[in-house]
Image (cartoon, rainbow, N blue to C red; front, side):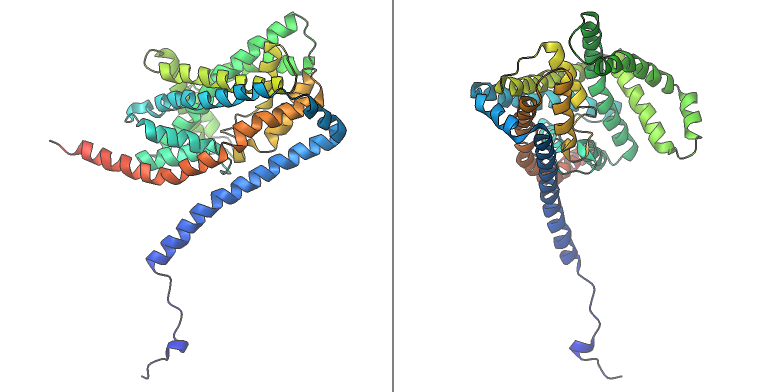
Length: 353
């Protein structure tokens, strides 16, 4: 049979190296594009609120800037990262998993605050923990436990604050305070009720309920219960989470003072907690658009003027969201190398003698 000419031969499939290059380029470009999308969404949300508020009013808010308070925003945000690392490292060690090295924890935490994941920071956490330990279920459980831990600290704080504000007759919309006062105790009671194994089994039998997610959620709730019953062992989780919230709320307060707003501590806590109806690690793309809108109007609902409230949220989110994107991208790109080092160290640790 005559040989086919080179031009008539069918195209050969891509080689392994070519596929690797294509995958590497996609992995490099995709987070940058998603970060740009997140930034655009945040900008659109700010512009829409500014248009509703009135450009003149927003402009006047920038006439009375107190730049010395910007240092408080920057300093508090810098402190928030090591605080969260402390909590993260403690939760990652649940179920007897090996204690993670601090450089690895730093990369995981910083990457998780980046605005380039559709599944949010918790999506990055789950993928990374699964890659480290090659255990999908345990990764989901620890990520769920981390989310529950965040709200186990913040929600009761907001609940108690709301009750105090109701009792003292604070000038705040009652429809903002009563949900915190009622829903938090009900939510915690429901979580305790659901965590009982036989009730979880009943939930698994309901239509459209995925069994593995119910099991992971219940195991995550029980993991937090374990941390509650052994605070001496998991002190890092509780102290780190409390310090993280304190630092981030302080940064938020710095944004308010930058534009001349000086609400009470109770108002700051309620506005902050309402603005983070879901924490920024759990929201897609770092909460772009959603957080800017919720935080601005939550300040309005605690009787702060809308125009400076928007300006204050923008100042806070510049440090909390925009300036965090580049370090997060760098940390994200370094995670693969860190995972490889962790696995090599784990294999060496298993080799006897």
